[in-house]
Amino acid sequence: MKMKAYKFRIYPNKDQTQALTQTIETCRLLYNESLEERRKDRGLSYYDQKRQLTQKRNIATTMKDASLKHIHSQVLQNVLLRLERAFQNYHRDRMKVGQPRFKRHGRYNSITYPQYGSFSIRENRLKLTFVNGLIKIKMHRIPVGTMKTCTIIRDIDRWFVCITMTTTIKNTNIKIKNKNDSVIGVDVGLTNWITLSDSQVIDRPKFLAKSLKKIKTLQRKLSKKKKGSHNKLKATIQLAKLWRKVRLQREDYCHKVTTDLTKRYRTLIFEKLSISNMVKNHNLATSILDATWYKIKQLAAYKAEVYQEVPAKDTTQICSSCGYLPDIKKKLDDRIHECLSCGLKLDRDHNAAINVLRLGQGLTFVERKPLFVSTTNVNKKVSKLLSMKQEAHELIRV
View 1: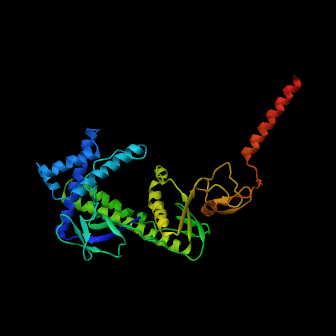
View 2 (view 1 turned 30 degrees about the vertical axis):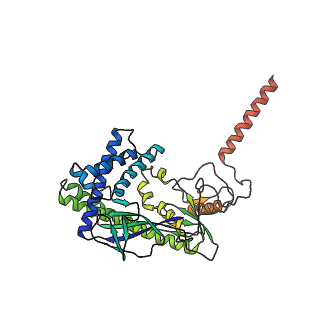
View 3 (view 1 turned 180 degrees about the vertical axis):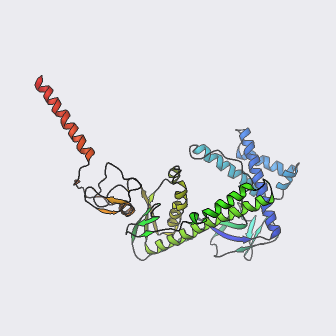
């Protein structure tokens, strides 16, 4: 049994948009209210809140509780499930995941129908419970399998539906099959975005840098607007749309590059990077995030016929020809690799890509004695000889 998700664009009319917006807002308030209850009462569990939710919907003493009656019960239960998962992630790894936080307006943008029946597709139209009429959906491909869940996503002024399917049919993944058995090592960086082990370099358009001037202008305009005014809302939407444009440009280019790589090479070998730790360097954080290394690896993983990751330790330092590792490591400014042992000289990223390929194929270096001995090793040997000489003199005196 395999799970697969399909994402489609939907076009709700004015009344349907209002109903979906109201549903998302009610779910946001429920999330915040449930989070406050769990912060006050640490012993409160997910199942306790589910029972309380049923009572609230049945009694409906306030206007807020009355709005819960116009939303499917499983949609509301999914809100509590999201909160429960947030607490589970926090308790599992407190160092990386912070406490669940309250969702301010605009930070809660999706709802989930967890069971087929509360939603359905009729004649290329989406039917949702408690939403009048059928919603127009642009199905650019036919889903395969049995429908399980449906998530409605709001992206500023656009709406999407993500439908999860289960299927027993094999080979439903979008793997691009190659007749050749070519293997390539891939090194990602900032100066050279992608460097392949065959010396090819793929650069990227810096979409953020092109839009940064306009983004700063809109941010200054937004900061001058009166809080809570209609003009501030318009400026916020305008700025959000510009950020969305940059995000979509990045995703589109990553799709094109990964599709081209998977058509030419059967096996892609990437280096395993801890991007979350690298972003802690505030000087390079913006450039690293703009490089979208995670997105490239994510798309390559499901498109390539064979995808592999290898440890990135010392891939830029070790010589790809003889395996010599110098004592003094190269700095980020050193863009040329010069081996002190075998004399190999080539681009730093190209050397790293060859090392990534070697690690992915499980190859080892032929043991060679370095032709050049580093100064630190010489100093160690000299100091050792001097100490031995001094000990010999003391023994002679005795």
